[in-house]
Image 1 (cartoon, rainbow, N blue to C red):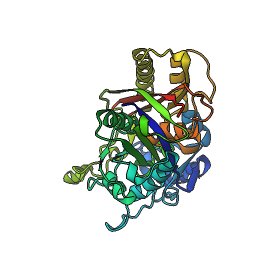
Image 2: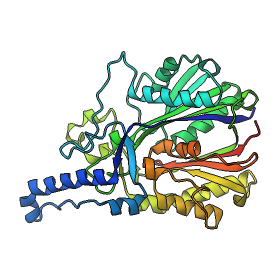
Image 3: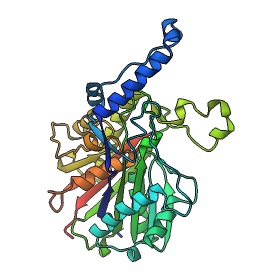
Image 4: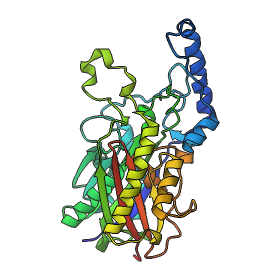
Length: 374
């Protein structure tokens, strides 16, 4: 039974932080830190912090702004993290609230209602609690019968979720799957780290995957093939977890937030992802030249440009490999789905595209799709 993507949705927080605002707050923190520790710095016991700049951020990443749940706390030099209050158990969780808004869009596009869905996946890089599953909460909020579960493969969660949804449809265990990726990346970002304080934003995407025979939407893509790969690496890491409270001495170490060795990641991930895409295309007998569009993970502009150039072996334009990170920054697993959601118009029936994610793990996922005539 063939599976198709029949709907997508996007929830975007209203608050936006420009690079200029972020740099102003970061540099105020740097000035405070250096002033408070000037004696130790003068004695050579401590390295002074370096200020950031808009030019540095845009050259390093291509990011110009990001949407966030709360900007006030992030831009407060004495705090440098969002204000997100823990909700009572009787209230919808923040991730559930985001997921429902994106899901309603996706279901509407697919011409589907809650009664049509029999499986829900929440696939994202960070979950706000261990249990009960956020996916089951989303299922209840939407009034969906069936079953639900959470999954985490960091930035590749959505593509891994798409293969999981496709497998469920092909096996007959589900007919219509709703996958949502509520990413609150600002909550795990170290806004006091010059090399990464600009990387992430907050957003939620939703995708409806269903059996081709039931699809009735106006913008349907057949899933031709999926391919996943993981390879262990410590170069992107977040050590936050339930065991942290058991080691009081290290509870506040910087590795309890996002940390990465950016140059090593770039050097290792670009060839890994390029080879993965090319190998996948060979497996399904599709020539790279016949691929119309690539919706790549939105982490770094230079990385995406180099991957696309290696796959196509030629210059390409922004329409062929859309970039959304200038507006949204890195939104982890949601990035490639945002690109697909916003930049799939103009494809003709039969055109081939690739949704691709890559991130911590390392993990790589590719989903080859074809514009359907449905």
